[in-house]
Length: 274
Image (tube, rainbow, N blue to C red; front, side):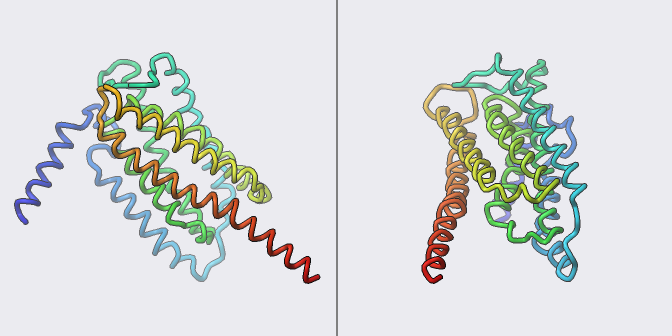
C-alpha cells in the first residue's frame, strides 16, 4: 500500500513538473489543482447541504439585479472568446492543430483564451447557487451538476497541460451556445414571461446537442490521422461527449416530446369527459 501511495505521489509531481505547460504558472489558481478542488468542494457543500438548509424556512431571495449583471457579463465574456476564435481562423486547421507552447502571439493568445474559458466555467457554478437561493431546487438535476462539475475540471486541465491546438474547437463550439444560453437567462431575469418560450428552450437544447456532435467529429478524426496532438484527449473527449449526448438527448426527448405528448392526450381525455 505504501508503495502504491509513493508511486501516486511521484506520478503527480512528475505530471505537474514535467508534463504541464510552464506558462500556466503565470495565472492564478494554476499552480496545483487544489484551489479548484477546494472551490468545487465548497460548491457541492453549498448546493447540496448548506444552501438548502439555510433556505428551508425562508422565502426565495430576489436576485433579479444580480442575475441581470451576471448574465450580461457572461454574454460579453463568451462574445470576447468568439471574437478571438474568428480572428484565429487563418491560423487554424480543421484536421490537425498542434499545441503551440511558445511565447508567440497566437501561442500566448490561445493560452489566455483557454484560461478565460476556465474562469467562465468557475463562474458557471453560480447558476446552481442562484437556483438554491431562489429555491428552484427542481433544476438541480444530475445532468446540471455533472455538467458544471466536469467542465470546471476539464477546463483547468486544458490550461495546465493543453492550452491551445485542437482544443480551439471546444471554444468554437461552446462559446456561441453559451452566448445564446445566457442571453436567454438574461431575458428571463428581466421578465419571467420569456421563460415560457418553449421553442427557445427547445432550440437551446438542440444547439447543445449539435455542439457535442461537432466535437465528436472534430476530435474523433484525430484517432485516424497522424497529428502531433495528445491522443489521450480524443480518447477521453469522445466517450465524454457521447455521454453528454445521451444525457441531453434523454432530457430533450422527455421534456419536448414525451411530456407534451402526454399533456395532449390528457387534454383530449378531459375534452371527451366534458
